[in-house]
Structures are given as C-alpha cells and as structure tokens.
Image 1 (tube, rainbow, N blue to C red):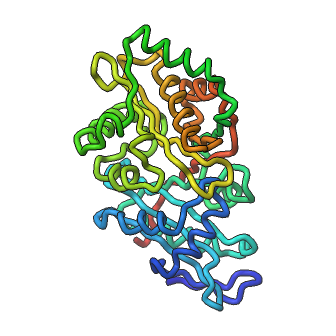
Image 2 (image 1 turned 90 degrees about the horizontal axis):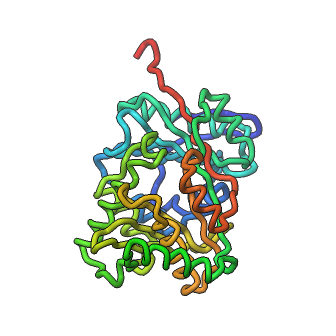
Length: 333
C-alpha cells in the first residue's frame, strides 16, 4: 500500500491488519480514545464474526521499525443505509500531527469508494485532542452527537425504584421479568430482538445509520462479552412484551463497570412509566453484581430518553461526534 514520509517519522506504511498478530497493538491504540475499552478477546471475536459478504477494511500504519502507530476501520453492513460507510480512526499518542492519520484516512475513503460508498460517517471522540479539527480539515462536518452519561447506582433511592415499578404494576398490571426467568431460548431471544428492533426504528441515530438485522444482532449483541440473560429485562402487559432494557457488566472501562445496550418501549405503551421502571430494575441488577456505575449512550436529539436518564441521576460526559463527508470519485475514475 501507500508510503508517506511525514515530519519526524522516517517512513510510514499502511497495510491490512493481521489478526491475531496485530490485535493487542490495535486494541491498545483504540482504547486510549474510548471510555469503554474492548478486551483483546472481544476485539478478535467481533473481527472473526464479521459477515464476509459485508465490505470491511481494518488497516494499520507502521513506522520504519514495524511498530503499529495507527489504525482505521472502514465498513458497512447489509442493513446500513445504502452508500453509507462507518469509520473509526485512531493514531497512537505521540504520533499525531505527522501525516499518519491522513494516510490512513485516504486509504479508508478509497476502499469505501471502491465498494460503492458515497458518504462516510466518522466517529470522533468528543473533547479528546484535535480529532474534530482533523476531521474538519479533511472535509467532514459534525452532524450529530452520541451522548454519553454515567449513573452512580448507589445514589438511586430505593423508594424511587419501588414507586416507579409499583406505578406500572398498579396502572397497567405490568409484570417484569428477565430473559433468564422467561427462559433463555431461541424463541425468546428472537422476541427480544423484534421488540428492540421495532422500538429502534424511532431512535434518531437509526434514521442516520440504519437498522440492525437479526443476523447482526446475533453477532454484535447476543454473543457480546457483556451479554447476560439476567440483564435482559422485559416489561409485560397483559402477557405481551411491551418494553425491554438490556445491560451487562463492563470490565476495564475508565468511567463505569456496567453498560446499557438498549432501552425501548413499544408505541402503544409509551408515556406510562415503563422505560424508567425498567431502568430502575437495571439499577438493582447492577447492585446485585456489586457494580457501582452504569454508562449509557443516547443520540443528542433523543430528548425523551435523555429526560428519563436525568430523572434517574445520569450525569453527562463527552461522547462521540458523528461527522459526515460526501465521497466523490476522481475525475479520471
């Protein structure tokens, strides 16, 4: 692949990542930017579980000694919006500003164009270094933000939890179960996906990126390190699934030791307190594991869920800037 001679680096080569040989270096670089770092084993699981029919380029940049100094991941899934590629780019601290990021970005954009891409959404960590300035310099514009929040579960009052859950029981005759108590069966897992998928259609980020297919759900969620049947919570009204909440233990994070994957309530049951009741039961699940903090992410325009989080006591933190660029083919292409 392409070679550049940036300031203060002798040479910089870009090549395809070799997994598992490069896994530890890639994870180390990426985790220095992410408050929810991946383990090497989870990185390799995600890498190997990628559907080979979906275009994906995981590239690394190496210096003259062969040391990996940067990495980029350019990809799209079948369920992603047509023409859209997603991108994460990370450069080892101490090597930024020397042309490494620009070279990786050029290769990633070329890959997207060659595979039918007409635009890219890059995920840029908010408030960390010069990532946003770098993206703007290369033609990306900030379009939305994934909002990160954390909750101290020890600070949530037990009476608040009892009242939130009791209100739903009294008003709706609601019943709350976990996937574990309902039965961790293929049928119930599919039902959980279908309710989540229906709710997810109303998530602002879904309209910007695309829906998650059943196949991708199995790869990304059902087999994730954090996934526990006890942490998949379900609200039932008259025996029907009305809402879901999923969370699980997160190890190695800089900001929390539990992560929320999704919370959603079907349209006919919204506005009646089910979402906050499910989140309250998630707090109790976290406590049962001896965990202290939960992290969650929301689109900055999803005011309804942000309002629920504020009621519980979630405190905002820097999240991810979604920055978009339209791709144009060279005139001689």
